[in-house]
Image (cartoon, rainbow, N blue to C red; front, side, top):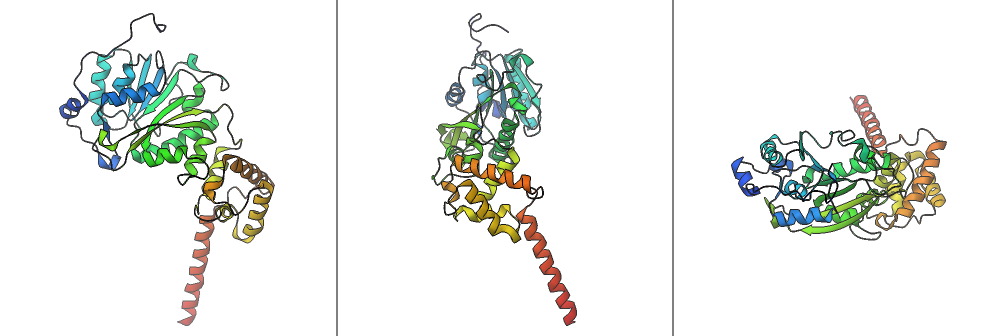
Length: 345
């Protein structure tokens, strides 16, 4: 790999514009896949600049589509760019970029939700978790329909230090609907505060870097788009297993307009709900009349720590799901009604 500054910066040769690529390969955004193309290369350059210095970096781009951000990444003088694209219609256009940047662009026709990146980049890039982030970056203009499940999957990877984070504290620069971007970065007490806010912020430093107007995309989405930057924290603000933290946060936000004890009560079976919820809140020193949006990450840390102890004392507790209990109760009530009907006959 050439050291920074030993060679002149790489620039792509003249190529058809993104609009021309779309016309050439008769590409249309698939509505069912929530696809929106970003055609303005000044904006794609801006997104890539905000990701930091990518000279000699290894970049993983998700959902490159017709290749707007892909061009800007290649022009940032990266060592290698790996793109994963599910939609086969975009592969020929990406191949044209690969031909124009020999040895720089690797194309995988696959699904980002299932693609394994653990062995995609050289072992030498790996850094200790406590060290500065590795020279590996994730960048993507995500289809709206996969953005939330994908960021939850990657947050779990951050927690387990696997997947893209096997290399260390890999940084991410991703696009979301503006509303989702605002949720990811919302402070305690904000109207946008949600499950996503706490899940992201207990594991990462999260910044809403940029808002791109909807009209910059083709076809124009009904909403503006937020660009969000994530850097995993050296030490998570809640040190409990991801699934346990996720369960506590999800339940807390079940009834976001009600007091927090209402949603947190759903962590416990009906017969012990009142007593156990009271115990959880008392031991965690959390006011039961706070709304879910008023709970800070510190509140959730206390709740998760106490809930973990309660699960250790009762091994069946973590497996409890209040929705399953509701279904069973409905089924029992239906059986009773059926029995009554038989007796009437």
